[in-house]
Length: 394
Image 1 (tube, one colour):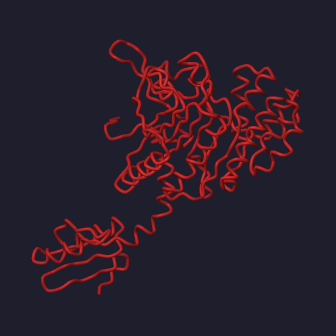
Image 2 (image 1 turned 90 degrees about the vertical axis):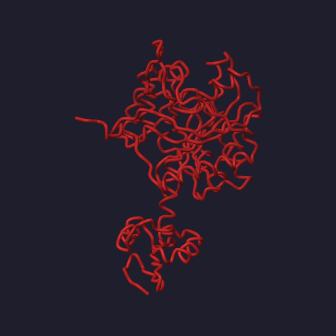
Image 3 (image 1 turned 30 degrees about the horizontal axis):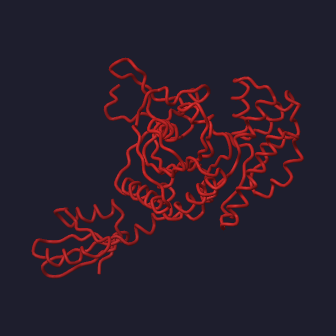
């Protein structure tokens, strides 16, 4: 079989309107970040594998790996946070830092997941400063940036990495058990959690409720009675503090909680985020606090929080919202040489496009194929306007 016309699984071509909208959306979001004091940085698409590999993450990321001419293992970046941590540590940048980026990330997902192995991502990172203020800033800024590109129905789910991590410690889970537990929480498997809780009765009441502990932020008020764990109580306190601050800023209706949330990357240490639109169940935003990450590069923790946005999903949502509008306002202008002046004047209008087709029949077919509403035919003896959808003339 020849593969010269096939694409690797999890990748796809982007054509015309989608490609343009991707560029415009990325620019608008980053332009908004600039106005909020974020400075842009860029890291290589691939780096040494050591930047990305660490324990469970290496297996879950399933890196795209290859060798350089000296036999050293390289990898395409699976996220943007790790390279940024490497850059900040290597150059010796001091905080507080407000950084923004845009670029592609690469992760090998199983075929049946339906996820793209290549994703375009933009986002922000705040390194240093007061942790709670930085978290409020990160969430508020990303909500505002999404509003700037026309998404007003974003829901930000807030969880805390310490809930899952402390349970793993208190229950004495080994690596295999940790992975199984994370899978049960991610899938919110009630039957699986019941079986798991039966094997670990220390936190049975909390475990049995954990898959249901998501939704309205008001559910936080009764969670403390389900566990005596001090670390979980502290995690809930932090979520409440963040929700309170964001609610004061007017973002309360955009917030929900998920106490069973588990992030792929182990470097997350505090509050974690995921984002959705009310019109779609597909996650397009992810992030959180990752103070432990800098231990890889500096040997000590640094306060840091970040949020990444999947632009592929953002563009898909925007296309759904604007498809009918875009189709209804476009006009194609076909002209004979003798009527070129009239045609050029008409083409100056917004979304009026000159046809490069030789004949009227070809222009009509082009208009139908590319979603124009009207076809204007400029000839020496007059102008004719056609409704492309109905084929009517006037």
